[in-house]
Length: 203
Image (cartoon, rainbow, N blue to C red; front, side, top):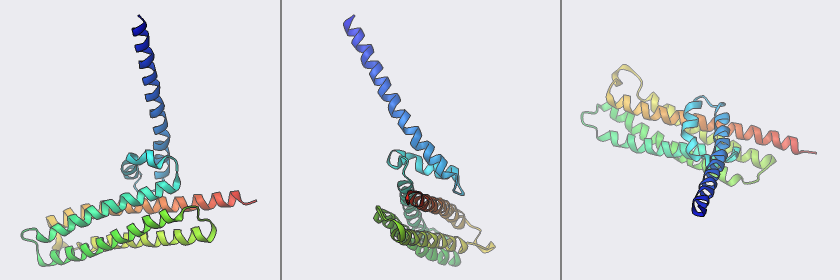
């Protein structure tokens, strides 16, 4: 009887611990969902960031940095994919050139997004003009990355490019562009909330 009682106590404790852990997670998920409403692609935003809820918690800065990190990862993957398309059998001359240009564009995208991640990481407790300077750098690089992605997509416009190469690359790059757009929106959100908090804290 004593063993049975101990078993139920242990089971109850395990259930309580599990429920407590689950209770903590939704607040982070809710924070991500709420934050993602400012983006152009909220469903994609939630889907791409939910796995990092335990790291993000309810930090605007960590959310922005994670969104940028995810964007770098997706851009690097897309760049690798595009590079392989140069060896596709039967690729046309104009398609080949568009792929080569896209490889360069995506390389720039990866570099600029990587710089933005490092910049957010260097911000620390920066305030006032220091914060604005760092944030302007981040916004400039992410906006430039979006331009690079759009330039890649533009290279595959026109009826003469209606092939599998165009379709597959456009699908990949469009996904990266949406992820990057969401990251920029979350960076802007972080900036505005930080500045609003700074004004509130002033005596």
